[in-house]
Length: 426
Ligand code: IMP
Image (cartoon, rainbow, N blue to C red):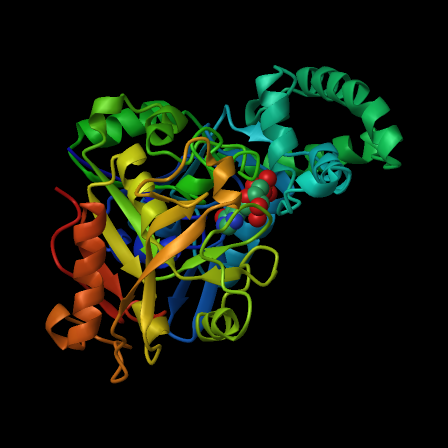
């Protein structure tokens, strides 16, 4: 048994696509357990950049079995679009199974998400507009439709009717119209195209682990966006925590051997919410340009800042991160000095740990430690030894501070740029 759960340890966009792609070389199976097409896992193969939002990154390797667990929400039209894009790249999705129980994102959810967020004023989240929150809300209200419902017309008609009726007054108040007949027609068209992918992912996952295969559980977003442990209310609506990997896939908890936290060498956030180390002017813009920090799902410019080690330590402790994959170290090439946040100040007091509740993050002032930069560049380094001394110092500083080993370092966007310092799969 060799199961690794990979999660983002910041506010998402840590570069999990690249890490998942590197690990897919070894994995026999890969599975998404949370979120939907609000995620965007980017892989660069040669000159081609591929963004996968729902299907696990392992689909790019023909021998990797891929699963989407019932912790995920699925927009049927979007899934077909993603499968179509894969087909255009000559990638077969024959190895893909999507759990019967995945809840469906419907046009109602998308409209409620977009129009609803706009009504929140100062509490607006800046969601991805993909209908994620309303879909999970309907799931929790026992109102949602699941993938399996697509294949039973009577059930589909009844359940869609109930959902449409429930949302009609809110949609009317928001001034939005969703045509139930059109929605039904879209679902009926999608059903036969999706039926071959629908299956019992929980049973398949148990077989995978019983067979002793290497399995990578591909988390989406980042712990600080977790519904329970993130910067609520500025979070997504799924469980990002590694505990969600077991629940979202139907794996008994004890089967997860190792938790890999993916960390970007600096901090970014897209959407609203507190961000103590945010850099607003030239230094922030420099990170945005050098790191190409624009949302892979919405194209929005990401907010950028110095690495917040206080929050990273929180993520490592809360999610039980054993190993770290450090991404985009090369983006800091030429920055002098490099700052990291090692504590906060709140009302004249020094805080060594993230404040509880997190709402105080809006008021804290970061306390920085300045580390020497590396003008000679970490870009493209393929071994720890090839890193400039100061870049090694940066890696070591992170490890010591958060108490987790940096097992993998990425020094550029392509598959070849970076190195592994120890095995990730046990
Ligand atoms: P939602 O997930 O679309 O509901 O958006 C809720 C919040 O999470 C917004 O601030 C989004 O920008 C943020 N968010 C959701 N998914 C991601 C992600 O994969 N990367 C970064 N931010 C995300």
